[in-house]
Image (tube, rainbow, N blue to C red; front, side):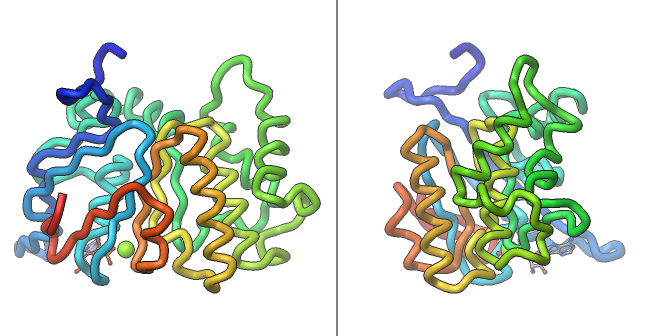
Length: 234
Ligand SMILES: Nc1ncnc2c1ncn2[C@@H]1O[C@H](COP(=O)(O)OP(=O)(O)O)[C@@H](O)[C@H]1O
Ligand SMILES: [Mg+2]
């Protein structure tokens, strides 16, 4: 596809990060967190990012998902330099191409499971798509067809995370970013959630997942280790 960066084998890089730096500023003091990260992730890969707490995993994920801006370096998403595109393009990229899943689910308490899943379609939705049907199908996919009207407080942790996964898929993104999606779940429920990601991967989605659970490595193609803001292997 035009616009994509490719390597020698011709595979597409969905994510292409070079010399990415991020500092936070406490008053006048610069606190460097990411020290020049290089990372390529190809279309269809399932990659886990692992590393100790505080090593910069979520900071990196926020840069990939354009939720925050880098201090230096480049993030190319689907071949587009996220620093150079307009706010509109950025909103489109985030709305259509990326699905987010967070550790604490980030559901809206007042809304039902179905309404939570539909939320991203209210601001952005692809023309000609029956989003209402899609929302129902996705809740079915994650095994919650009999819980569509339940509020988050009426669901277990695992069910809430499955609602969040359904929501992340409603605009049919090619890339799923998940920050410790099993971090608040017991191990059995965590495995169920991983099975869902594994199925999505088999269907061709590119998935980047932060985890600190070594057990999760069995599901992925590749593990990237990050420590003190550096990538340890790549
Ligand atoms: N908004 C922020 N302002 C200042 N420091 C931050 C902010 N977010 C994260 N940090 C710091 O950056 C470091 C990395 O955080 P984070 O990326 O959340 O780590 P991880 O996800 O690997 O546990 C930590 O030391 C954290 O305190
Ligand atoms: Mg984190």
